[in-house]
Amino acid sequence: QTCRLFGMRSSGTAVRCLRSAIHRGCGEHAQSMSMFSPRGVAEASLDRYLETNLVDTPTVLVADPLHPGGFDFSVDLHQPPATDAGVAAFARDRASSAPDPFDLVAGEIDSLSDGIRSLLGSDHPVLEVCARYFFELDGGKKIRPTMVLLMSHAVAASASAGDVTPGVLPSQRRLAEITEMIHTASLFHDDVIDKADTRRGVPSVNRAFGNKLAILGGDFLLARASMSLARLRNVEVVELLSTVIEHLVKGEVMQMRGGHLKDVTALEYYFHKNYYKTGSLMANSCKAAAILSAHDNTDPAVIAAQAEAAFSYGKHVGLAFQLIDDVLDMEGSVQSLGKPALADLGAGLATAPVLLAAEEFPRLQVLIERKFKEPGDVDETLRLVERSQGMTRAKDLATAQADMALEAILIMEPSSARDALAHLAYKVVTRNH
Image: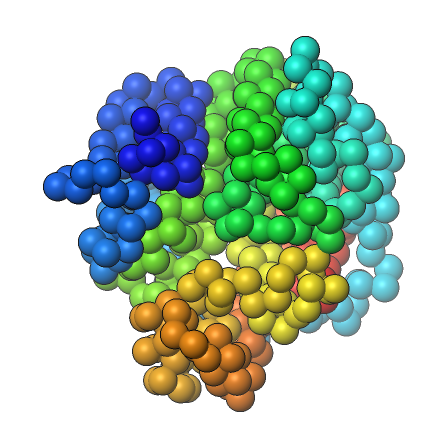
């Protein structure tokens, strides 16, 4: 009945919202489901309702209980020169000698997929095969679990005056698996929403198994991730990762609606949405890794400082990652990205290169407002963006985010793991795929 009334996309989003509320043990969050009930509209899809009635309505965001003060997503388009801790200095002084982040934890990443597969056993073989789909393929950099493992090493090195030898705790290794499971579940659901045909150069899970199994496979991944999360027996970590699931839903709704936040610019709205969809998982999983490093003799103030530094690092790397992803989508091709080029424009989404280019070419604002729906809109947008400084400025914003990520981890003791985290941020903003 819900699917008939609201459509599969919105029903799946609503289910994820309820699941997040249940995980966090906050019954009052379930009441927010009333937002999915269209008033005065009968037997119409929620998608159509949103597009025709709510696109221009300012979004009202409920305060995040973990960060009641919120975040400042105002964007300084005239970023100061990179500091000595920034990406430019890293490229000049340390890039050639810093350990490769993926090589440093390669052994642990190799066992990650095996660990995940062991968590996904099911008495229903079709469901198990669907849920394991991407974990059976040798693809993807697994940047999120790599980040969790490196952060675990870096925090351990700080606790032991620079040594990386203490290694990763079993709980932190399990956290890396949980992080990748949540990320993969979000890909399953996003590909259904976006009607994607490919992912990582292979058929998307919805293409391979159909929409119904893709949704159920994503749900199964989230269920198993939640079970593993509960077994960590750390309430704060459970709340952090459950909040991530809520943020994934909020970000998807923000993307579906378009619109704007009251008293913020379109670019700030874009950053806020990207934090929910990309940055939150990186930020909160890094913070969780720091929290799990605590032991009986640990100074709580030290752990708190390390956790906030880890959060800041993950948030800024996540925002930089999405900025570069959007630039590559503008520049790229199916061969280099493994997904259709200009997918965002085709879906009516204006990303940073377009928003920045619109400041030079007001004509773009007209195209943005009608979501590139008229014939020739996408081609015209591409031509104008290519003539503008939009992509260059978007790359500069990504570099500024990476600079802030590098500055955040300066409080940690020097170690190969900290250098690898810096190298990871550098790779994020210099990648071409």
